[in-house]
Image 1 (tube, rainbow, N blue to C red):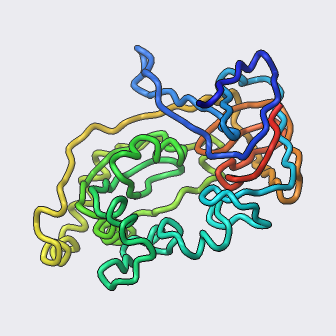
Image 2: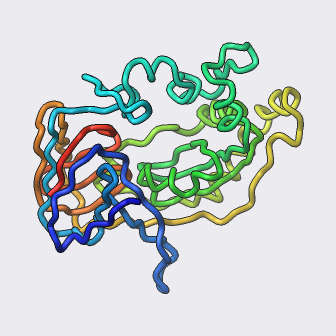
Length: 289
């Protein structure tokens, strides 16, 4: 069972980093923006980061990296937390996860067919989000709204549900003709993102890309792509002060990161000394004080 640490006790934590756990809270009565609540995960221990805002925070890397799948020690982390053998053998590390349209399951070359059946052959959602401007993305329905919070989105809107991950990849490729699929992390962290009318953007894109859906429906069937009629969701992040200039911390170059905690957005910690993407250092053994 994970131990939840009272931030006032200042008990050092030691263990391997995982990406921060983040979940939405209840929106304030005068706002429909859902507040994000962050928990730092260090081994089996947990630290409430929202409660540490405005206070000193220090992370020290001990030089060890452990694979998040097999647990072996590795000199280098691949794909955010894996040793090289796992990176080369696991289906979750294959290129088709990043580019679902390249799925090769039916070619008989899937690294782990059973894993693919559990994770890829289930409904996926195509969405629009606003993290540094308008972007398109895909995720499993079970990852909503975590996926959006991990990206630092201030707004998000599901627009389509499809039968498989591969199909979501083909739809994303279609939308990428008109809209970005990546986040400008520097703009996201500066907090200078203007709100968008995501419903209007959805309608515009559907009208522009209607002809592109014709071959997809012919290939997969008309019922494989279900349009969703949902309201956009809005999120706000626990940030006391956004950085004007982005300076990044990197454990590989600087094993100690310290400063006053100014906020969290996406998977970034914001300190007065700079920012650090904790997801990048999954599996790194650290102490946190």
